[in-house]
Amino acid sequence: IVIFLLAAMSLVEILAHYRFFDVLRGKLYALKLDDKKQFILLALIAFCLSAIIDNLTTTIIMIQIARQFFKGRNLLLMGASIVISANAGGAFSPIGDVTTVMLWFAQKFSAMQVILQGILPSSALWAVATGSMYRKLDKDTLDTNTEIVTKWSRSEKIIILTVFASFLLPLVMSAFSLPPYMGLLLGLGVVWLAIDLLKRYVPRQTHLTASIEDLIKKTDIASLKFFIGILLAVAALHTMGVLQKLASLVYGSAPTESALIGGNISLGFLSAILDNVPLTAIAIQILDTPNESLWVLLALAVGTGGSLLVIGSAAGVVAMGMLKELNFGNYFKLAFFPALAGYVAAMAVWGVQYFLF
Image 1 (cartoon, helix red, strand yellow):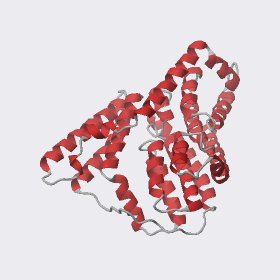
Image 2: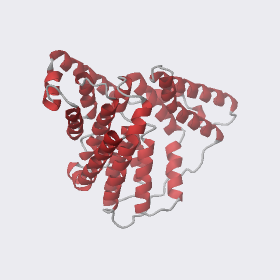
Image 3: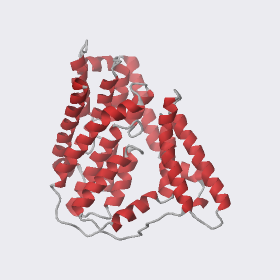
Image 4: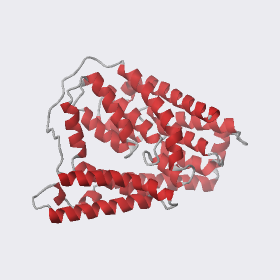
């Protein structure tokens, strides 16, 4: 998991260096949309982008872009919507959230299964929550026009396309029964090779002159240490027998299918207070069910339940740090009920899929 996350973070750093997100902001500015249309578009981009890169990085990038288009209360609404959208988009992708990566690596479901069974519930959550928050927007605010970039060089296009292709390689590796992290490592190596080859044959000075080693060093090692610490702590609790007692409390001593469904949904609400990574690690240790659909439900529940409160997910905590006025109280007023309505909708859609199909 740590190697997978390190490779993913490195690829995102490369995207940032080659101005992918700067050009995205420039393209959005060129559309000259009002706040309501921009709100829907940015929320949709956050939803889709988090399925390719992780939801935490998506939140950081999209809030930086949102600052150029929104002010005041509209900016807080946009920030909260980005958190909800990024968590929803990451929950149905095997590489979109740390929790889905953990469950995928633990072989609790296949990549295609979490995508096929998770995309409709996640989309329902996004639509309900975004629609609810859309109605709260105030009148249009002036955009900030700074450092607008609208195009890449040919060499930059090659690197960016190679990076996005690299994010698909874990799915290819899993199809051949190989560890998914090998796909990202292979992709990172191919990107590295492409940069070095283009540096050799492009005569003028460009962004390609950057050192790939320096870009890799910019990855968030502190976050990786946090995840390692969480996993070690959960392993210690499992050895001490604490997790078994917790399993009996949440799921019952002899959990039935309905108890497992109810327990997973309850963990989603609990993830609004506790981080979803330790909850997922605990569930992997204590749950004993071969039903892959129930593991998809767990991924959806803990991945999106954290959106109920600003402290419930890493994306929310980062957003709170980037937007100082998006504190616990303001987030609760603006986003709790839309996020709750979306969460209920997602669970309902999953239930319809599970019991009817």
